[in-house]
Image (cartoon, rainbow, N blue to C red; front, side, top):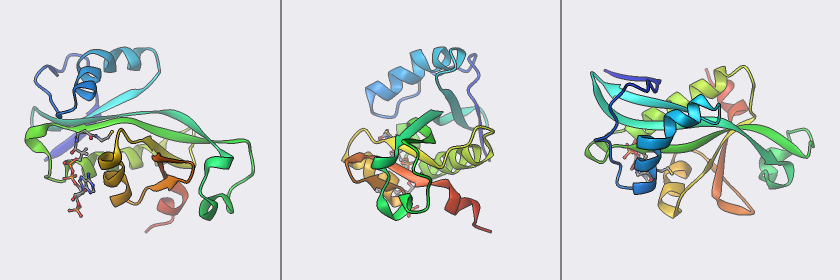
Length: 161
Ligand SMILES: CC(C)(COP(=O)(O)OP(=O)(O)OC[C@H]1O[C@@H](n2cnc3c(N)ncnc32)[C@H](O)[C@@H]1OP(=O)(O)O)[C@@H](O)C(=O)NCCC(=O)NCCS
């Protein structure tokens, strides 16, 4: 059984590697500092005590002019709209391709829907075209002006049974 929990600073993260040094380094060194300073919260996926992956959430805003027209038609024309950012998301290289990226994403969506300070969407800055493809596969929409920035509207998810 997989559990997704807030990162406990006592958790040993040294052996985690997703194959992208910047994402590993962030997790090993920076994640607990960012949590203490209220910059981002980090969540980890565990199977028994095995560390499988992590992601971070923080607040964000999206300029109204960047929102895809299919979506902006139904939104108020404020200069910027509140959103929730997945800053980083990574699965240990030994466990990739087993559905864990999807599990982390689903957990992030659930937490975003429950957040007391709402966001109209989840937003991500994909690190490259391959990461962007992962998010598109899960229904994220590209921002027309910035193809590596994608968003997933939460209003439509809330309506699902
Ligand atoms: C990208 C990453 C998080 C995906 O996690 P994963 O556990 O290997 O992916 P999953 O097994 O959950 O894949 C779920 C689905 O996404 C699809 N998918 C995975 N990577 C994909 C990609 N790059 N492009 C398109 N689809 C992709 C899978 O085919 C699968 O589809 P299905 O549900 O229809 O079978 C993982 O490979 C990783 O950590 N990579 C290194 C870090 C990284 O690039 N992070 C991206 C955020 S910046």
